[in-house]
Amino acid sequence: MLRYLHDHAIRGVCTVKYMPLVWAALWRNRTESLLTLVALAVGFALFTTMFSLNVAYERSIADARTKIFVCVAPTRSSAREWPI
Image (cartoon, rainbow, N blue to C red; front, top):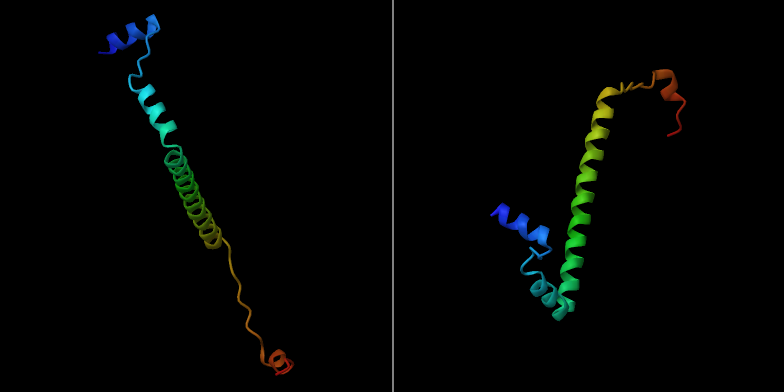
């Protein structure tokens, strides 16, 4: 089969058999084709956004684990100076 496709490709014969049929269907249903392409673009955009947010959250959690947080509690003398 591979030899058959290779021989036809060398001779210049189109190996994509159904491309004219697909092309005609795309132009026949223009609105449906456009909505399908928009839906695919939105899906890829949402997937990319979800993936990048996940990476950002993982990096921020890793950065927070490496930092040392020091909690300073107020002393009695400084607590009396705070306005209530």
